[in-house]
Length: 90
Image 1 (cartoon, one colour):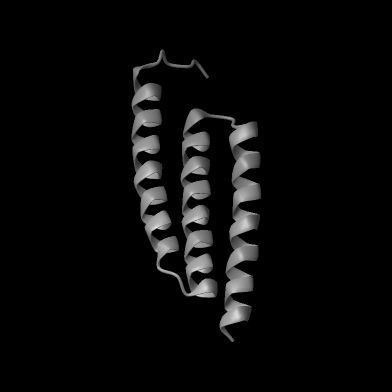
Image 2: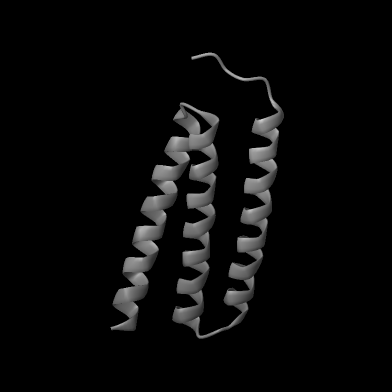
């Protein structure tokens, strides 16, 4: 049962990362790219949790916490950078 859930978690996370990377590349706005970055970090955290479930090692949960912190800081920095940039006319 656990192996099936881990497999589904990994498959869903990889699909989410693929779609988010596509959104980061295509845009169309910087806000879309920020949200895609958040999705990539969230899916990476899910992959770390799946690794912890599969192996039984808590080390992967530490990795997940590190990813969460880096993702939070990256989102804040990118949002501030966009806020300070000149406005786009649409």
